[in-house]
Amino acid sequence: MKSASILSRKNSILIELQQVRQNTLDLLAEIDRSLFSTQAHPDFSPIGWHFGHIAFTEAYWILEHLANISPSFKKYHRLFAADGLPKKERENLPDILTIQKYLNVIRIKVLKYLESAPIDKQERLWRWLIQHESQHCETITFLWQLHQQRQNQTSLVNFNHLSSSSSPDNSTFEDMVIVEAGEFILGSDAIEAQDNERPAHKIHLDTYWIDRFPVTCKQYRQFMAMGGYQKVEYWSSAGWQWLQQNPVSQPLYWVDSQDWDDHPVYGISYYEAEAYAKFAHKRLPTEAEWEKSALGASLKCNHSRLVGHTTPVNAYSDTSKHGCQDMLGNVWEWTSSWFYGYPDFANYPYPGYSKVYFDGEHKVLKGGSFATGSLRTSFRNWYHPHVRQILAGFRCVKD
Image 1 (tube, rainbow, N blue to C red):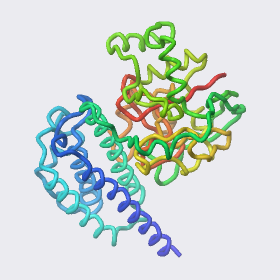
Image 2: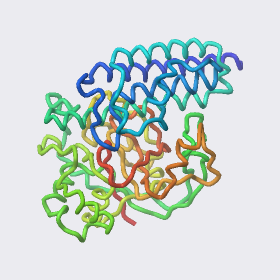
Image 3: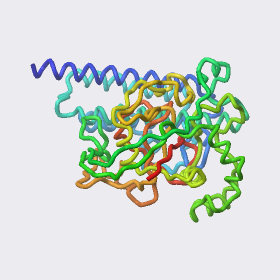
Image 4: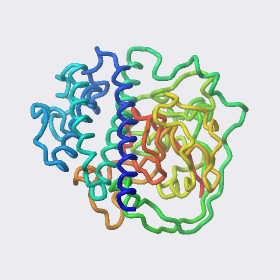
């Protein structure tokens, strides 16, 4: 019985490794060679670096750490390690074919080791590795979108396909659902859960109302039209200071077309989401409120670049236990919570993965985007509140 279970888990890991690698290779085939080694934004590494980092991380944790195999491609250690070169010095990269070979050589060795790996003792690290590659594929996706936007090209969105995914009705998407007071389990102890999702623990929340859908472009356009970016009363002091230093008047990925009315707004900072919430006489949810509202949400949603862009917020009929829709995939959702470890937090697989970001400077995001591969309601993302390059939107709550 035990051997059958181990074989099943190995097969599951093999399938997921192959699926995420196909996504990686598809992205590699799409990238413009002239932009492969160029930073799209000072806060992020060049696109090409992420492909090399995927191979390096796989070699380090599986081949060196688990299999005790001597390091492969030692010359790449400083270049592709997360704690190696500063981001601005990562532009001197091997060409695409060389990195493709690097990915392939490492993967062949990894799959060979998987055949004999004691998966009952190692499964958590293999699951972590799969998610690591998936997360970097998402980073590559929005960096590619930034490059294309800079060149005034159509982003990853295929406008010719909009009519097939547009909303079938004229809903306003302004209704809210009630979540009654009570206890629930925050976080997860599942084998695939990251260290910052653990341990699962019981907490109590008071009654609150939450938007059934993420805020749409149509709703956000009202905020813009009513002078949302010009009126200080909608902004926190930190948000207003950010706005004065970064005088923007619309989301980063804004498309001025009513064809997008029913899609979730995205490409906004936490400060912009916070300002809209005040404009709407609401507030942003805590991560616990968001997660409780999402209980029962399924993976029938827009994720893993299956569509390649956002879809209308009601494109999928699945609802959470409390009646919310579109909580997984499509766009990440800002919460008001700062990113900290849960009680009895234990770092994994190394201290710098999560713990270094428990600094009171990163906000939690929940739910995943159209480019996110690994989805679950307990999953936590984190970014500085000023960041707007990521695929993030939001929904609001009321007490």
